[in-house]
Image 1 (cartoon, rainbow over the protein chains, first blue to last red):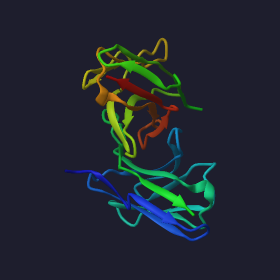
Image 2 (cartoon, rainbow over the protein chains, first blue to last red):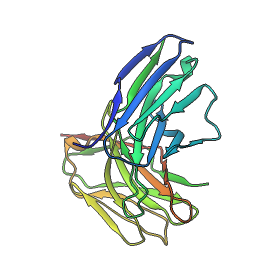
Image 3 (cartoon, rainbow over the protein chains, first blue to last red):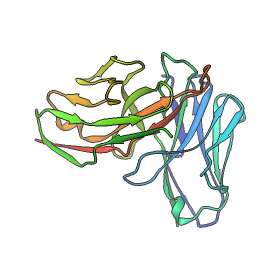
Length: 114
Length: 116
């Protein structure tokens, strides 16, 4: 089935040690998003790609970076994770289609910082 | 800016009870509206959607109607089951004029617990 796949499901990293989360999609959607979701909160958009165009949210910390080497893959890099970066990270995709504007989400990566 | 306001939970219901979760929105432009569901430890799944005023989205017994005059998109289900226990997010997306990507903005989420 076409879907959005995130790896790994669970990631433990050390304080200050760079970590990369990955996302792949078989939907061939133009847009890919990264959201951060902390416990009992709404998902918060960090940034998104529209094809190769990168769009950063104004309040996304510089510690967070992203790469999209091709249509199918997108990566979230956290350069120096702090304890406050522990969260669920959600990747999503959507197409540019007014009739079908919904985002499709992966299962998320739960990041723990120790 | 765009925002979604939904009732805070948790909401606890007995099995077969009627469910309403209120959701109102503020948006520039003409948004599409969604309800997403999140089970523990999982990502978000689209439950239903509506892309224009007076549209009714429905799925798995859940319904919501896009009311432009009241800027609302309340979620309802006539008879809940234990398996409906989850967190429900109301959301909207508005694209830039002329097309392009549509950024999704979420409400805070409402936790539903259904007891047998």
